[in-house]
Image (cartoon, rainbow, N blue to C red; front, top):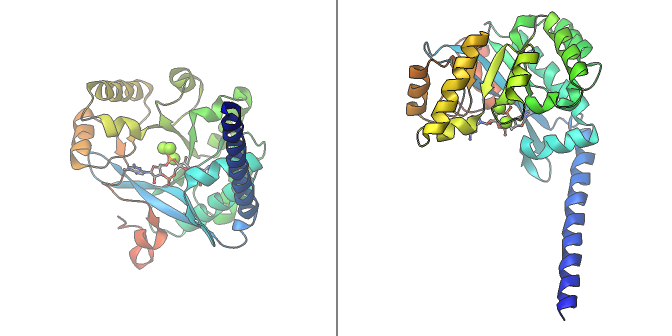
Length: 276
Ligand code: C2E
Ligand code: MG
Ligand code: MG
Ligand code: MG
């Protein structure tokens, strides 16, 4: 009897694993067509200077409106896109669409586009960035690419090479979700970053945890020493913003400053100059 129960458990487990795998396959299939079917949309989330409150730029965040499943969050479909390779066409679409949009703005606000490790591992990505900038006419200094530390855990030499080529175009590089990876300090030393994005987990704990606050201070000091500005992610309250102000943090992003929204909401009257 115990054995029967065990068998049942094992079978059930296998079935649900199958289900998960099946669902991933279905999503992967649909993803390949999502671009052509016009199911992808970009949202923009404002990034502001902490002391002046001025808008510095916008992070571009991908949304997928699936005809049957509804809106699927990027946390769910990006990993699948990376696994099945669809991240290459999807990522290219994001880059081109965001650059094309920003080129029409009557402002010098930056756009920050997330770059997947899979894209960075692809030899052609620097060429792609150059081509898209030419096509859209966006000034290179208005484009920032966000990469996470995990991006660089693979083939470091290759990643470094690609980053150098991208930077040579005049595009800047931000390190995303900083403080959550394994090799933070070594990565910072070896790679040519222009901005540190402090992971939002520190913000959510800053008021309750002296340790979180101490880590934020240490990273701000590091940024100052390396002369790299620090942006705090996930700022949800006025008091969190006040802490950042008193600690001397350069930039901030989060629901308190503005949620990710479709582009119409950041360019009233057709320009983004008075956005958010
Ligand atoms: P990320 O690059 O770290 O983006 C920030 C995420 O935090 C976004 O989630 C944003 O909506 C969310 N966020 C912003 N402010 C707050 C806040 O105050 N509180 C909380 N709790 N969350 C906040 P989202 O849009 O779901 O994206 C999740 C992740 O998916 C992104 O993390 C990024 O890694 C990835 N992603 C999104 N778009 C793209 C894309 O076009 N290409 C690639 N490769 N990855 C993307
Ligand atoms: Mg990001
Ligand atoms: Mg982030
Ligand atoms: Mg993140």
